[in-house]
Length: 53
Image (cartoon, rainbow, N blue to C red; front, side):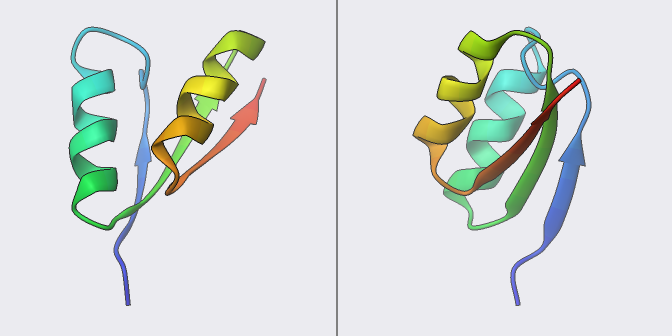
């Protein structure tokens, strides 16, 4: 079973590489996004869920 991780600040200087590394290692990554453009970045990683707030 894959690990599930919630990343806050997922589009910041540190958060982006963390999200990418976790997704590459097979984790189910969850993140909140404010900007609709950020949704497409999350979708591109494949294993990431997102919620706009």
